[in-house]
Length: 231
Ligand SMILES: *[C@@H]1O[C@H](CO)[C@@H](O)[C@H](O)[C@H]1NC(C)=O
Ligand SMILES: *[C@@H]1O[C@H](CO)[C@@H](O)[C@H](O)[C@H]1NC(C)=O
Image 1: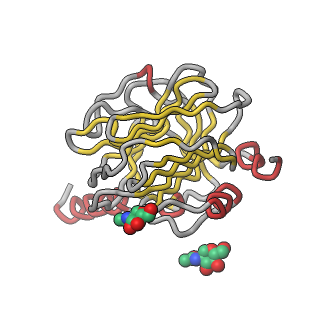
Image 2 (image 1 turned 90 degrees about the vertical axis):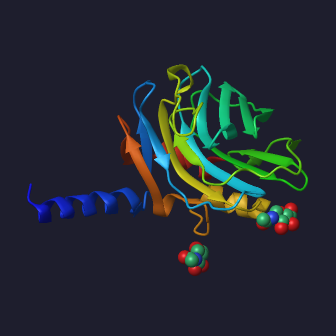
């Protein structure tokens, strides 16, 4: 390759790597169990987090446990993790501590999940399909570390690595948004019913991400969003 072509190709891959993609109306499909396939979400989070809300849709027919959202910082495992333990049971880990929620759910059905946490009180809220579950408390006064590696599809035991097939996700994930604040119940409902446009950590409509391995972007099927109107 001549010098110019090389630079053009380097530049193109750099642009591709950092380009924010509008994934409205689409989902990531993780079609096959593995210890490698995943998506890295890239964010410029430079200050520790004292408050956050994270919302997304997921659809899976796995009955074993799996990771839904894995956020590690350098040297800190399970800094922020949403883990489905089994049907009807979700865990939130913050700084390696965890709380668990039980929910009655159809299986397999698509779910819309929102999780929020506030350092000052330690209160964590978990919403499934627009309904709040019982509030829990953990890690009061803690700050979640900055400069994370965020991974969908796998659970990290290291910084951006250390995956385990038996904790991997198989299914569809979409409409993922993350804020550095605790959303009000009304804002949660808006997110559940539509497309929020003010999320400042991760934004499905302008998502910096990198696909590794067998992960495919496909249109969101009606079933995944129609729940909005059935509840
Ligand atoms: C986090 O939320 C609390 C209110 O619960 C607020 O007082 C505090 O300023 C927030 N922290 C940041 C960094 O936004
Ligand atoms: C966000 O959406 C609302 C309602 O759909 C709209 O009024 C507002 O202008 C939007 N804001 C931005 C920054 O796009």
